[in-house]
Image (cartoon, rainbow, N blue to C red; front, side, top):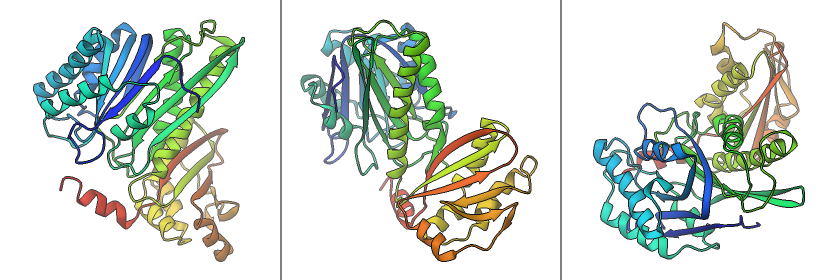
Length: 390
């Protein structure tokens, strides 16, 4: 992984969690164009309105993050605590509070332990280094089993432009977006409008097309910072814009897959491909019905080729779905013209043993294609979430 120029990272243990690091910090050595997209849940974490306000300038220098506590449903105190996090960070780094964005993830409805938070921010500010990426990744984890990062680069007019993405997410995964925090940094020099368009596009194609349990979180956020240190001519439109968009899309796809793969209790990634839909939005609706069907998810977990469950899930959209659709698992056609056909159950079961199971649905009603990711549903998911607060 090539490090993105001009960004420092840290992750420290402040005591919010018993052992793991729980406060993380990203710092740009110079002003960065910045943007973010957030959950559409009615009840949002306190960090969201605070970060939105600070993003009005279109720039930032730092992002302070805590795990173990979502700072959600804490009323005015929650907002004040989120602002206080930015103030403490700004004072330590010699910035204005509006230069600092904030994010929280973890348990809902519990006030932030600000003494521990303040201690953590001070430690994080002292620990900043270009090699602190792994520590930051640990600091943002909740029920995640593994750290999640993706990086890439491309060349434009002799300049190497680098992008790094870091994410957390394991449960409460459902568009829009997923129960996740994602932080993307790049040394690209890019016009702010182009940065906004690109992030919205990439989130729509990736983080908004994954589901683990159909439960939308209150704290979902994807941040991006671009500090311009690569020295490239400003990206605004044309070839350079699409090169940057393709690279960012690669990052977001990679992180999305990692999140689903690490879904709480998950043993398999289920890749649902809907073909020949009359629109992308309807193709997504169809994929989402299948992705959120507990009957489909448990069948895949049990490696049970009971594919009537797939068509039953699709059929809930009865007013818009044709009766003659096709469904295949891997290359094995299991439903043809809306009817379950004879297929080699042994071969089908072998397809279900794979770490990634592919379901292809042909709606025969247009020319749009949509890909959606979900995971299987296991006993471990129930155990993890039945003990979340205890």
